[in-house]
Length: 243
Ligand SMILES: Cc1cc2nc3c(=O)[nH]c(=O)nc-3n(C[C@H](O)[C@H](O)[C@H](O)COP(=O)(O)O)c2cc1C
Image (cartoon, rainbow, N blue to C red; front, side, top):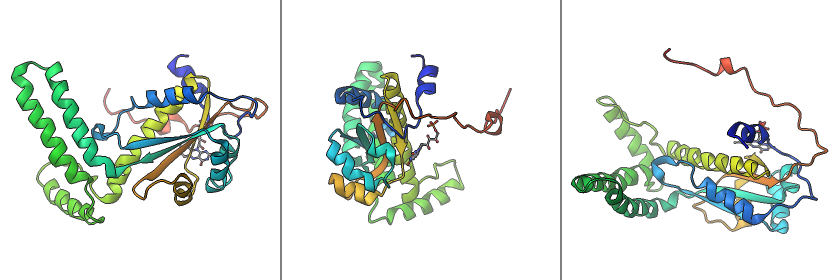
């Protein structure tokens, strides 16, 4: 399928065909492809909980407000964001970049580029991702407001804004997954209509995990009409700046 065919094929499916099972390994392969999605500062602070057990899916139905896209799903993927892993990810980025820089650049650049990467992941990222009981976000906001008077600076520094950063990246991962599923001939539906507290309890997820998006998976029921896609007029959303 071309990219356009994949995009046309992907629809939010609310009724899956009970007669057409899908392969858990193929879904896992689509999740592997989703790891190629970009994430902010390459922090990759997401997990995918791939649910193939029908009993667990049925347990999750009430927590997903009884939606048929869940009750008829063959499998589910619960995407979570994992802010508590930021220190581990910083170290992983530093370790990777140390070798990657050697493979990519001439020796004269190694020291400078390694120092830049190390400083980014030992100073900037910990400054942005540390929480200190939710108080540090307020401190960051004050600092960024003052600093912003004198030079351009990213403003998304409060706890809430950092949450958005994490969920933005996770959404890109989920979208990449859904497109990979489409290419495999499988259907999906992104879901945010759920009780995150109950979902976490059913899956035994730690307090630090935040449920970002659930994606139901299966093959669409052919007898259920999908209807046309509604999209607002492109010209009302498109703003070209320049020629
Ligand atoms: C973040 C997000 C949350 C969504 N949550 C739900 C949901 O809880 N239940 C549902 O049936 N569809 C949900 N959808 C699907 C949208 O309703 C659907 O994508 C939209 O109507 C466009 O239809 P299409 O995907 O077939 O083009 C969600 C979509 C997104 C992007």
